[in-house]
Image (cartoon, rainbow, N blue to C red; front, top):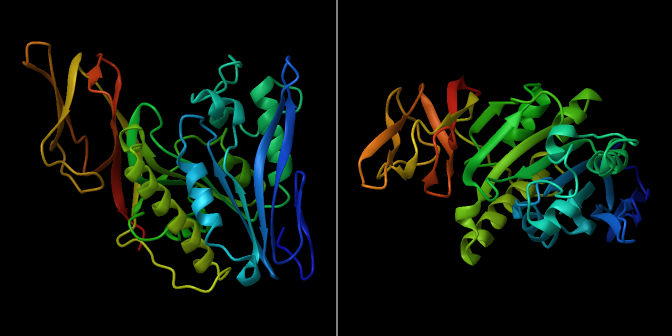
Length: 332
């Protein structure tokens, strides 16, 4: 749904006339104690008609980078100069966010909303919250990004998952400089990106941040990086005046999760860097036992780069340690 001249835009309780920014909520149910569950939304309706760009944050409640990115982007978007509209959902999963957990702790069967989206009207509680969000988004958004991070367990550097349609890859490149790790979506259903693809629209999943980057200055830096990308997307699609920048090179790859071969203390190798090309067999990290003996090693499984590392050094065999992008080539 692209906006038309002199047309208001309504999402949930927020109705924005052209050239205005309005806050509201998407009603999503009620708890046993009478507490209403509402998804916050900010609608920025441009003075001129055009594309609707929708940004989702905190579908995982331990990933606060989306909310701060929405707040920082909102401060920089002037609705009087905007063509089309930007819809910001800082917190998509309010119960998970309130608990600072990946999913809603009150919901056992649909705990991870990013695996059951778009939910269903008659499902478990998180199904219903997801369904309410989807009903609000599906007919409004033209393009969508979901902002993720490493949450409580890890740090993830700039990485993107796409559905491999040309429109999805274009949107990924529009994230801007440094966002060249562009991988094929490993999960063909259950996410906003997959739901958008199913109705012929465009979405991507972006990753940046996590536990080891939540000190005040680092957290603000992550927020600014993501806000820059939101603005860069607006520049790319001519929604705002500005010069878009792009990643160079932009890689095509597949994700592989590297697991701990032994238990102990996880120690990344000195000098290893995120998003830096490695050869097969290059060392990434080692694991030492309580006496300091090396008991396991993590090595690059193929030519590529790592974009995620665990935050806690304590590790048991089989625990997640690293996200690795096996590079298949470039997208240029």
